[in-house]
Image (cartoon, rainbow, N blue to C red; front, side, top):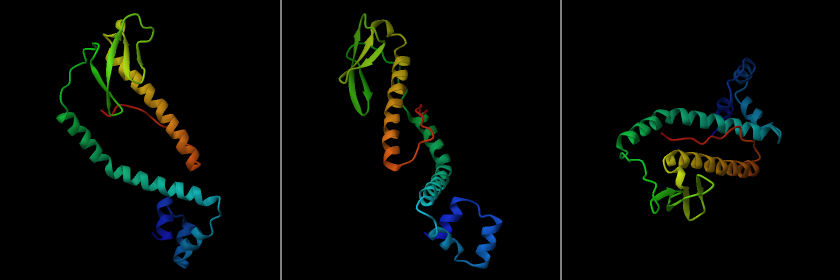
Length: 164
């Protein structure tokens, strides 16, 4: 990729840069090569942010179509019965459910089983959703912290939500 295409993707050229380019086509090459060591990472971040924004806009309709297809094709699954021995999937594995009467927490995961309080059986789907979002947020925060340290950047935000 030429330096001129890198610069043009990062931002719109100003009147000054248009005039400089018209007078000397190698202006952008010198501009990129004359960046200091501190300026280059911010240029790369802006460049990849622009590429990512363009790519996501191009794929948006496809993603929305896939979500609609998923809704049409997905089997109609009833609410879980929430009885001991029932299985629930988590991170690609199946874990059993144990209903424990008199438990302090509504829902807990001990690494081998989901432990559900007997009094929380009726709103169990809500407890599973809240637990999943809470656990997902913690995992996302940890991954973002790790990647931020490795890349030397600060994340603006991260969200955990339902895919539809």
